Amino acid sequence: MGAAGSKLEKALGDQFPEGERYFGLENFGNTCYCNSVLQTLYFCVPFREQLLEYYSNNKSPADVDENLLTCLADLFSQISSQKRKTGVIAPKRFVQRLRKQNEIFRSYMHQDAHEFLNYLLNELVDILEKDAHTSKSNQESSSPSEKIDNGPNEMSVNGPQNELIVTWVHKNFQGILTNETRCLRCETVTARDETFLDLSLDIEQNSSITSCLKNFSSTETLNAEDKFFCDECCSLQEAQKRMKIKKPPHILVIHLKRFKFIEQMGRYKKLSYRVVFPHELRLSNTVEDADAEYSLFAVVVHVGSGPNHGHYVSLVKSHNHWLFFDDENVETIEESAVQTFFGAAQEYSSNTDHGYILFYERLVCS
Image 1 (cartoon, helix red, strand yellow):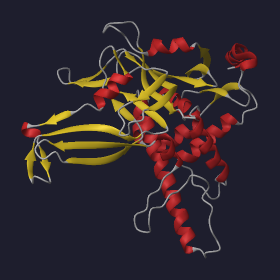
Image 2 (image 1 turned 180 degrees about the vertical axis):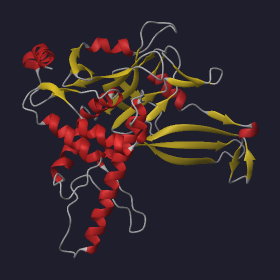
Image 3 (image 1 turned 30 degrees about the vertical axis):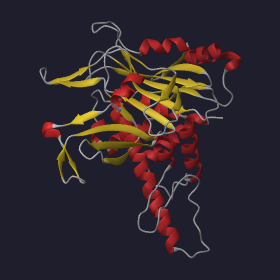
Image 4 (image 1 turned 90 degrees about the horizontal axis):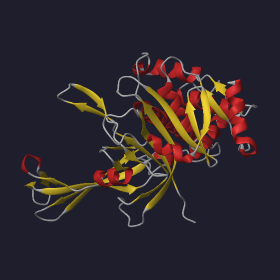
């Protein structure tokens, strides 16, 4: 990437951020789905910093078995410690581990970036939880004077029996939804909480993320065959149900459901709908009255007209600059260019570059 790297450095000039690295990732046949997601996670700064901290605390090869977490930490460390500001890195070790661990990603067919992101985050959580349980067991079996330091932000325990592990992946991405069901006979409200690492939203033509979120939290009436069993009434009753965000996450990941199964066709179809995603987002469908405000910092884009073929690229905001990552190639783009990835205003359009996964960071009120 000599010429391309020089071009990027020249484009940023003296505005090139101190200590930052912009590296493309080599594609191993069909790994654009992986590369695009890895770039967005690398420029999710809190996640990157905590991953590198984990790496510095656990890089003794004799003590740590290789897994997706160690491979990802090693890759991020390679990028951040490069002497050059730009270039290309081959995430070979990470991809090999991914393919070894999950047969879905072994084939050279087109893969889904959201499916990969979901798998990766859940896998990282599982590894960190196991690490925390192991550390706690070792700590309990050692003498009181031999306390084991698990590092910062690693573990939270609720009581001796009911153990709750809160990893730094949770602290970045996890939010809580509450599912409220109101019996229309006795007015009793039943609430059930569930955690999420991302929100998958149904989309409509010429809509916006705000309207998609409102639809996500819209009230649904349960009647006829879908009546709700009310514990107070001890019988099936008509009810109203709605989903709201009880605890907004620090990093809000929004997945747009662009691939829909069409029964008449017997296959999935890509929805190229135009869905506007703003740079600044205000979450109003929260349990608390106070709105949560977010700023867009990354977008995974699906390029192509169908679900079974195509390409993935990513847009990233770093130090107030927007960058375009396409596997090995990295270049700067204008902020106004982000809107070209909203989607097509008409069904039949030559534009096949559509925002697919959006990353927002919560703004901290001063």
